[in-house]
Structures are given as structure tokens and as C-alpha cells.
Length: 195
Image (cartoon, rainbow, N blue to C red):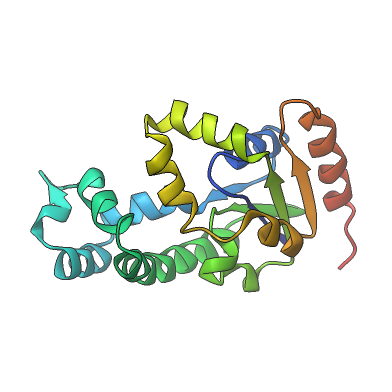
């Protein structure tokens, strides 16, 4: 089974592109969703987060997302610390998920596929690219953040051009180039990929 990553910076539309693959019947693992789930349900990870970020990390048994975001997006060391706790748990969970799949190929969607090192266990990587002004507009609309808050978060991610250079394929999601033909062509290519 071919293991394919799908990545891109904030606001590029990687979740939308991933959903198109899912509609085509491709098993999809979302590292972001898994991270949120594991921070809420994995007792060991939960204990580590409380030890490193304090009791305020959880409120009424639920992860206090706004508190955590406030901690990590203004402090690169705390962001690295949180990633160092969450990524190994997500990578293990993803590996278990892959073992349960029966398909020609599977997709693992992750914003920081290269930064976390999880790309090393994959065969190929698809990048999703969008122009910066469009990404900024999408994030502000989706998350209700100010432009400076968005910039603070984007600046903590790998440079978009560098990320796309590392990918085996790139889907352009600029609202001008039709994405469905790109996805269908890639799907066909991956179904027939010779390892």
C-alpha cells in the first residue's frame, strides 16, 4: 500500500483537497484532528501537557484550546515543546491507523509533515499551494484572527516555497485553476503507481 502525505501552509486549502480524495474513496488520516483527539483522550499525553503547561490546559475535562494557543503561538520554545509531546503520539496513532487500511493508497494530511519528520514514513507527498493574500483572507475569515495574529502563526511554519519544493506533486488551489481535474489526475496516477 502506498502511503501518501498531503501538506501545505495555513489557509492553502489542504483539508478541502483532502476531502476530494476522501470522496473518491481514499482512506484519509488527519494529523490535526488526531492531535486534538489525542490531547483530549490520551492519558499519558494529557498528563505531559498539564505538567508542562499547567492545570489551566484543561477546563471541565476538555482541552482549553484558547489557553494553549495563547501559550504556544507567542513563544517558539513552548510551541516546540508542545509539538514534541503531541507529534510522537500522532505518528504512533497514524501508523496504527495505516495498518488497519486496505486500499491501493492512503492519505495522511498534516500541516507540518516535514517539520515533524513524519514525512520519513511516507512514500510520496502532495503539496497544496495558494497565493499568500488568498491564504491570509481565508484564515481571517475561518478563524476570526487579526492579520497580525495570522502572520505570527504563519511565520512559525516552514517557508511555503521550500515546502512545495520538497513535495512530489503540487495541487494549485488559487481559486482560478480548477482543482478537481488536478485531484482526479493525481488519483489516477497514485492508483497506478509502481513502487
